[in-house]
Amino acid sequence: MPSRASKRTVLDELEDTNSLAARIVAQTIGSPPPQPAKNPFAVALGRLGASKGGKARAALLSNKRKTEIAQNAAKARWSKR
Image 1 (cartoon, helix red, strand yellow):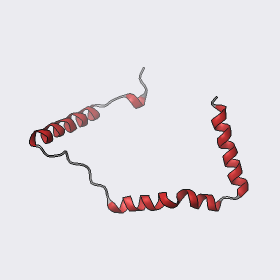
Image 2: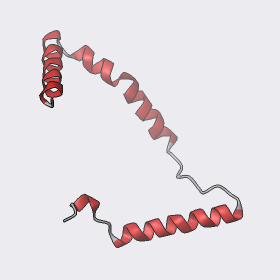
Image 3: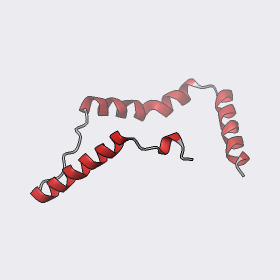
Image 4: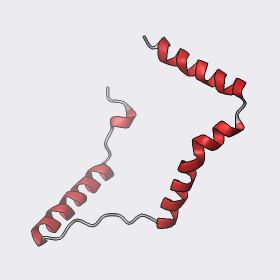
């Protein structure tokens, strides 16, 4: 029995059919298929958070807590073997 995540709905199939049709028309005309535009403000905000995320978190943690996190990570890696 397939899992819920692998079930495809009619809407998914229609979306695939429509995107395929759009791609075929774009190839026939000779123009590239339209790409969804990204919001430049959201992109900048994402970069801002990503650039300081780990460093800011590490600065807030005590050495004892960093050691605990590292030990838990090592246990998790080695328990898989």
